[in-house]
Length: 290
Image 1 (cartoon, rainbow, N blue to C red):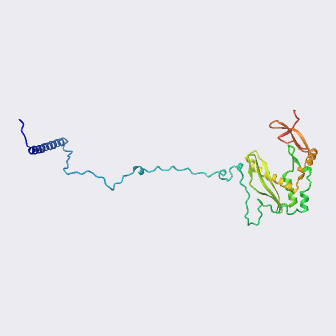
Image 2: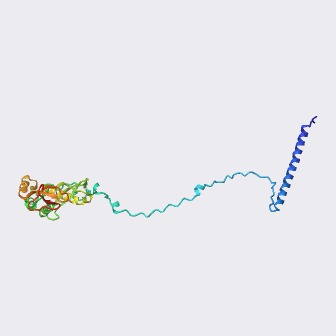
Image 3: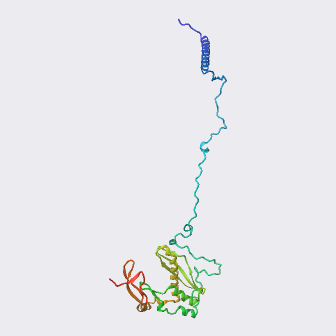
């Protein structure tokens, strides 16, 4: 028959039993530690603190360190010393086929000089002296006229200059550009004004073909001479060269047509030349079909 134990007695009994068991456990643990320390020869003695411990709490002033930012950036690679740009790269004109950028200067309105890029100062104000007119209108000797291979007659540009020098004196005339040089893939052109004794005489546009970009500087001189020849027509210089009757007489008396062979290509064709001239390289005189 089971014995009935009051609740208060059971509680007191449980507490005393738990306290007794705890004391036995602590004693067993102490004796176990003492035995283990004895086996180690007393070299290692470990003590336990009976003081209370508190959990660590983070400080409000703690700042997390950014290890990525702390890493030093790799040193920048040394750049090689830059070489100076070649003269072709720093030149304002890198390709003459796009233009020469040689537009004439525009003078101030208050300047006393005449702006020949747009002025017509002195045009037809009065005729030149009779001495100058006689030189300009003098007939052109046959010996001064040349013939191109295609049969066109012309007066060399240097002879136009000689006529102007005799009429106005060296320094008494000049060509003033009236615009920028225009460069196309095959030719160049520019407008010029012929000025004599401080008066505008004529305006004409010169042109000249070229075959490669290296020939553009030479073509600009040919363009200027072509404009001079056209301006001189207004002064009556060498006007015979545009007279059909003069041309027919000259070709009959002073020119001839011959068969020639182009030496490098062996091609044959007919060309015109003066009767007192000889066939020159790259052609040689030949008979058709021979």
